[in-house]
Amino acid sequence: MQKTSICPKYEFAAELLGKKWTGLLILVLLQGPLRFKDIKNEIPDMSDRLITERLKELEEKGIVERSVFPEKPVRVQYQLTSKGKDLEPVINAIQDWAEAWV
Amino acid sequence: MQKTSICPKYEFAAELLGKKWTGLLILVLLQGPLRFKDIKNEIPDMSDRLITERLKELEEKGIVERSVFPEKPVRVQYQLTSKGKDLEPVINAIQDWAEAWV
DNA sequence: TAAAGTTACTTACTTTTCGAAAGTACATGA
DNA sequence: TCATGTACTTTCGAAAAGTAAGTAACTTTA
Image (cartoon, rainbow over all chains, first blue to last red; front, side, top):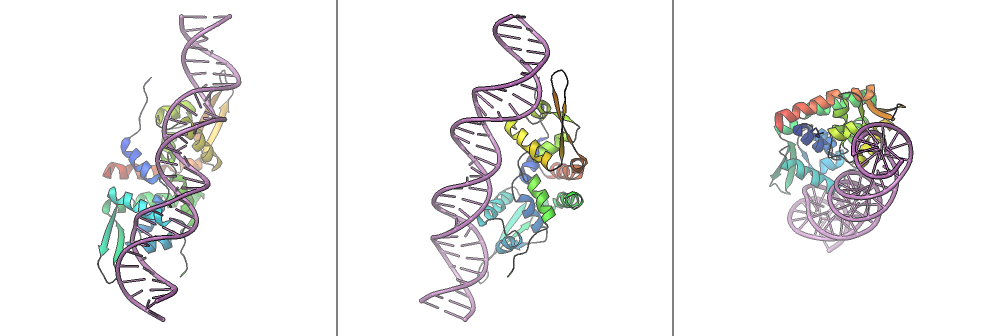
């Protein structure tokens, strides 16, 4: 009676999207590069702490890229990598489902 | 400077899939109706407590249907509703992404 | 027939994660 | 100089998840 185990790749992805706010964060980043304050404006209910935390996780996973522009006051910008942009069909599928059923 | 707010329908869906184990649970239920113990076998790392909890939540949201068959030993079966089955494109999109990038 | 196993949960307790709020460092503007 | 803006960090109580054991109803095995 051995235990079956699920596709580990899917498991990785499900764990990624299975964290609170990640789906929303990726959705807003699909618009294009955003600054920290822009993300705050787009997702007002998400706390600073969690914005930082999630962005850091997504950066480590190669989904988001953080760029610092040493301007007058420094500007920090977050954008999706190609790995991140490739999540667009997932986000679209979620949106389609939401439109139909929510 | 007013706060923008995101599509609430998408937010609902993102919150749904943004809970741990939900994505995996829906994936295995796409196979067809399963019993509690089958789910345990499919997702061995998910605890009984969380299986019950998630199934209950999904039932409340109309995504999963629970049926009790009063057989010799009673049999309890969980299956996706059409609302639940319609999540298949989402799950497929996640799988495609995982195949390509994980 | 008594002990052990199965199924579908529940309960109790610990650890981890989250949320809310405040604080920090640096910069510009009034 | 005092307030404001940006990008975080720190602290701490609350909620969620992990772990383990327990339960009730029934069945199989010895």
